[in-house]
Amino acid sequence: MTQSLTIARPDDWHLHLRDGAMLAAVLPETARDFGRAIIMPNLVPPVVTGAQAAAYRERILAALPEGADFAPLMTLYLTEDTDPDDVAAAHASGLVKAVKLYPAGATTNSASGVSNFENVRAVLERMAEIGLPLCTHGEVTDHDIDIFDREAVFIDRVLDPIRRATPGLRVVMEHITTANAADYVRSQDANLGATITTHHLIINRNHILVGGIKPHYYCLPVAKREEHRVALRAAATSGDARFFLGTDSAPHLDGDKLAPCGCAGCFTATNTMPLLAHVFEEDGALDKLEGFASLNGPAFYRLPVNAAKLTLQKSEAATQFPEKIDTENGPVTVFDPGYPIHWSVAR
Ligand SMILES: [Zn+2]
Image (spheres, helix red, strand yellow):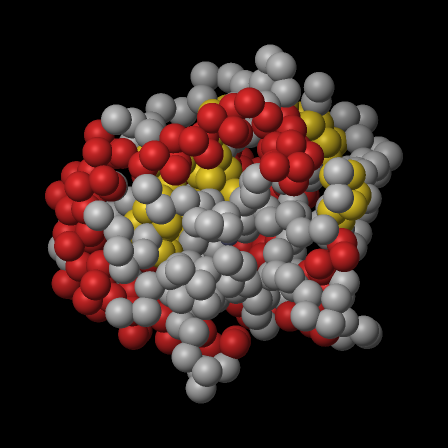
């Protein structure tokens, strides 16, 4: 017996494509199922100016498989030297859809991020004026704050003060991992949205640490207690339009993951839609999947919903996903939920 579900072609509102050989290897994985993606700017060096974003967009388009139905939506990396006029021009031209805030040192390639928020006030005020969203990596980086508390503390110490000081600023709390963040979103107006990853709906911190350390489940923000995973599931499957999909699919070579100081990131571009179908079905919310993956994101970003469709089908046999994606420099491991998935994307 085959069950199927057709939805508008989904988008990924938080994606890492990297550059060069890695970009060439992972881009087809996203372009297969997704119409658009918000492309993270944390390259080395970061994508700070409109000119750098335009050049990166060209490299992505050049790496697309022929006939792909995929558009990269570019972002700028906010630094204390960012020029408000450059940001406004990149937005006015249609090139840039968001600006990304990394607290300095929070995650992969975030050394150029913001330490003193006073120094970005003028940029944030201009963004509020022109309606350009700010995407936040919502973790404080203070050494005295426990890694499992960094998101909750970010809301109180950084996010809420920024939003109070900049009325009208539209903000996406990216890859939220706690009930605190979901509750904060619900308590605010429609200028605040949040993305949720695929893997944070599936794993909690036990998956990383129990029975031997599992580097492929290590990501930032790190997965939290089970009660938080359950809260994220409730938010994603609720139908509340402020929550939408941002996979944070983040490729690292196996050699960089399986190391004494392993990189943070889960690579979910390959199997996200079947995994989400499993999750939403398990929670009796298959009818909410299209909102989460295909409708709520465009509504927040004030873009049209994709005209193309995507069909998911469920079969008796478990779906076989590739274990790894090959790149010129070595393999990248595809996220494994740890249980069989019977959904697949109809081709
Ligand atoms: Zn990310």
